[in-house]
Image (tube, rainbow over the protein chains, first blue to last red):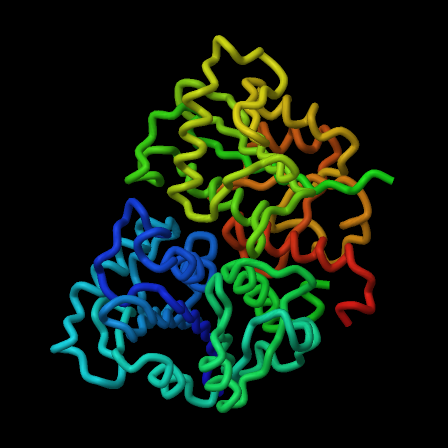
Length: 212
Length: 212
């Protein structure tokens, strides 16, 4: 059996798809790309290492080059550091290096080790998910603790930015059968929701007795 | 009954207690203060608001003005933003404003709304905890899900930075009866551990039926 993969798709409704943001004013100049960068850290990084079974997609729907998607593959990525400025610098370089002329209209092209870009928007992400079971992290739906499927198979979580999801995105996700799931009674930052879901999968992936 | 409080005490073994770090190179110039700032966000901030029942202490043991402790009180704090650079700017201002001459040798002095400083180190934190039940977040000890006490009373979690705890700190915490508790099978960044513990307390604080 192939090892199961965890995928997180973070949708930035206004997060910039071009490199013309300022490292010194990330929240004000990037359409809140900072929210998405923190999600990359939460999904990919653990103490002193990367999660090799995780892929993160940042769907960038803001700015003059939108839509673009960045894909971080934990199995291949290098030099992913936890602090926001380092992550922003990395993303800036990737966005600058990937000229639209050299990027096909659909599909991912690797720009750096483990980091790829696409011009296809959410459609390209959905095509890339394969047979993953899709969930939407939001405040409705059953509790993540009641799901019996986590850790058993390929799984993909769609995560909103500070504004949540717009109606068109919700319709798109409903069309692929994505189901809502929630992480608890309080509405949290996206990165904290990712940390909690990851913990839930970590727990379901080890034999029950070892964390009793 | 007084509302229960959650306290997080993050100990930065080398995190600078003076304001002479660079916003453009936080990890390299501040003794990894960035790790502690991310803990402040995880502990205090939720979607569009602050957790009013949370207090965060940053124990700064690095640099020429160590030890100093910053205390963020969620009930009183204002203008706490989630991005790392804004948090670093806030902390820089607080560290610069609190001259050692104007700060007593022990006890907390408020510098900005909801943000206080002390020169007393870990001893001042312990004195400030009152009757809180103390835990150490690390990889030993029972699982946080098996604790029956969370959410019932005042509770304090001691959290290490990227290096964990040194022996002297462990001895100090053992002396106040702090018990180890872990958040799951994988060793995580401090801020993710805080998010997971906070979720556990959120769950225990609401009636069981409402998140079944």
